[in-house]
Amino acid sequence: MDTQKLKQLIQTIPDWKTKSSEVLFTELFEPSVLFQDHSEWTWKGISRVVIPENNTMFGREGCKKLQDALKAAGEELWISQISVGMPLTDPEIQGTLRYLDAVGFVPGARHVADAVNRMISVLEQNNITTTPEEVGEVQAKLLLELYKQLKTDHAQDYTQAYREAMNVWDGNPETEPEF
Image 1 (cartoon, rainbow, N blue to C red):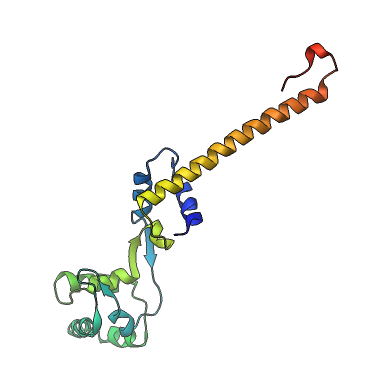
Image 2: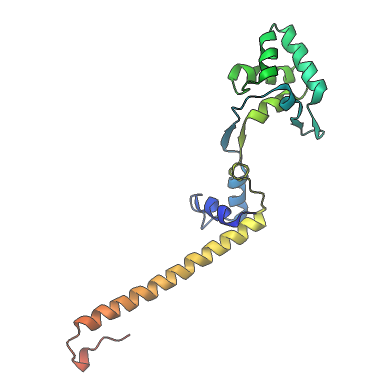
């Protein structure tokens, strides 16, 4: 885990000092960032998309079903374009993939759509895996750092005020500044 990066992420959350570690974790874990992969996808890449329900890949069978469904819809051009590579983030392509999955023609096609266009968490965006307990530990360290800085600043302010008072002191023992 990248503790330094997690510190930075925690500090971006409004009122992070007063929130519980569970609330902070939830805010960091909640999908709130749009992820889009505009790279050129081919059938090989599509076949490697993981289907989380059964932890398998979309595979050759999924690609075959998708090709058959696209042919039936008169979208042969998409088939040839994917063969050489094309971005799959286009709203029409996204809608088609999600529709084909929803009606059962191409089970798992929504995961192909999600592979290139989905909401992700700030943690996923920064490639951080953590727990509420680790977030609490980092938050506690941050709060301790703030407390130390506050105490140090207070002592330095006090010392500076004493120094300034001594610089203007006229030497009278009765008015000598106290430290």
